[in-house]
Image (cartoon, rainbow, N blue to C red):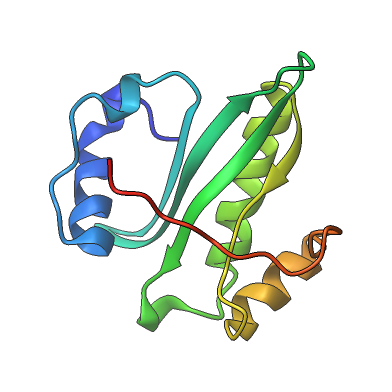
Length: 132
């Protein structure tokens, strides 16, 4: 898991996968979880999200993004990243995790199913984005 002393690794991951500069406050935000995979000095994958408090006193994880560079796919990196994310969340007290992915993203859907995930029981859902 990336913490403040590893901020340069986060910077490299944000540049690699978002083509942007990271906000310095990101790692200081409560509930932030981010993992970065490397091969030597090369950033090969990452995942990030948050642990969210629930009104019933429990917490859950939201995995916002998982990405592995094209040259490093199908090597177990995504599986390791999601597993690390889930393990850290479980250790912090989270009891559930959710994420969204594209309906046609078969590799991601296969990964999430193989890790024990299941489709939402409320039926088909739509994602909405709001610019604030």
